[in-house]
Length: 85
Image 1: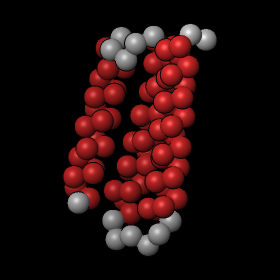
Image 2: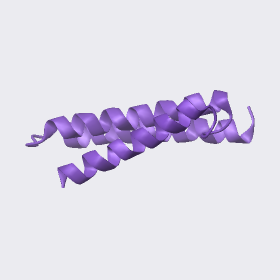
Image 3: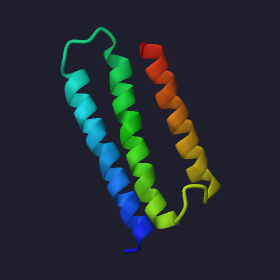
Image 4: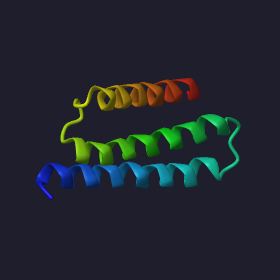
């Protein structure tokens, strides 16, 4: 495994860990807007999975659908974050 793949593995695990932590802290507490919290946790998971795909692809910008996945996912996380404020 080369350095880039190792970095993507660690980054993917980090996003999944953050999703789990966020889910535990935000969703299990009584919050008025639980749908946004569920969605944000799912988006973090999907972002982590995209790093595992990137390990195979070799770059985040190739293939183009992986770039689109990351851009749309990041924009969705931003939108959910802004909406929840």
